Length: 78
Image (cartoon, rainbow, N blue to C red):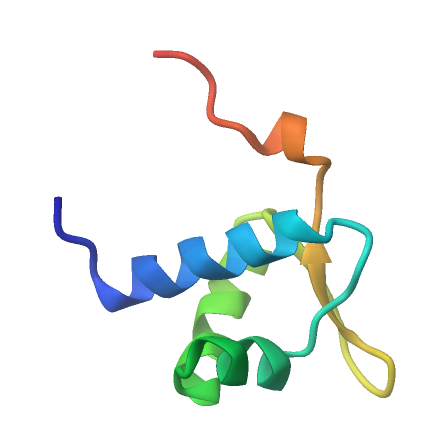
């Protein structure tokens, strides 16, 4: 299966957040960790926040984190 870069970045970001669910991450931190564009990741983060998957906080000490515990974020069985 082939994914778009946008989807790939979104999944990587969600998996990274799930690894440390109590922590808030900065866009720069995740972008440099994965070696991707900060601007592109910012668009991904905005879409994830609009979808309710993550929460964001602007300003000093801000960042983004999972909006729900890992269990409730899992897809429902088909």
